[in-house]
Amino acid sequence: MTQIGDSGPVAVLLNPSAGRGRHRDALPGVLERLRATGREVTVLPAGSVDEALASCRGAVASGVSALVAVGGDGTIHLGLQAVAGTGIPFGVVPAGTGNDFVVELGLPDEPVAAAAAVTRALDGGSIRKVDLGRLTDAGGNVRWFGAVLAAGFDAIVSERANRMRFPRGPRRYDVAIVAEMLRLRPRRYTMVLDGVEHQLDAVLVAVGNTARYGGGMRITPDADPTDGLLDVVVGGRLGRVAFARIKPHVYQGTHVGHPLVTTYRAATVELRAEGIVSYVDGERAFPLPVTATSAPGALTLLA
Image (cartoon, rainbow, N blue to C red; front, side, top):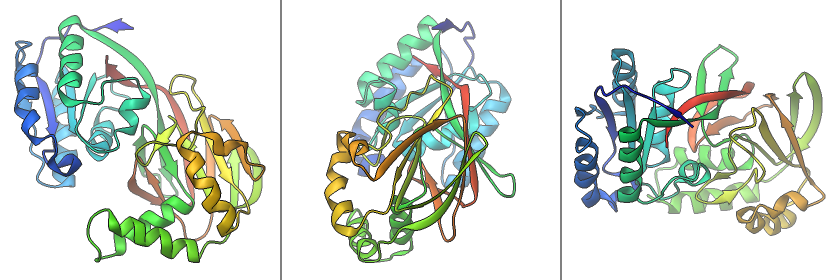
């Protein structure tokens, strides 16, 4: 753990609708705690995803002493795009439903407790460095991720759910899962791990900087965001019955013991397959082919 001495302004990316608004009443108290540090606190304009991202990047470019994201995994993901690799300290106050990245970093998953922890870190000037994943598409576009890159069944389900107009809310994902289970089939992947090529058929491919995604599923259970490596989990030629049986084990991370599940570890992971759009931290990213690279210490975390 190292120290920061800057007492300059703090920018806050705030999403009051995170977690379907269940922590909305706590948000004024969060801002009050941050202001109690004596620093200027600015809530960034965030009327849309594009505006939120531009606001975060503008704040970082202006030289704020820290950026604090208050919201769910999507809000945190947006903040990462602005602070990754800059050295600007990043604070996290989770107010979503999954909070996967926060839990894996050992941070408080309740807003008031998290705000108190961020405030102590600001007052004490304490930070620690953790790794991020850096995702690049064929055109050179970059997306940073803190938790997991999905490039198999779960990404396909998310893509279907995002196209659906009915039903609304979480039920869309339930319907999308059923629909894609009926269509389940292994797909041919080319995977290159630190320059070594693998040809494989798989229904599930996940690349983790941390262990969890999807609200508690430990898909890459041994991933460590301080080791400079990415963990890869591949579910091979699993049929519908075997896949349905293995899914519940993901919450404990014991699915990796199945004979058709293979694990790898690499600093750089290249993935190629037809008809797959990747998702990172639950957000839509790039169509394959993509390259994921571990970026050691790319995140400066207030902790």
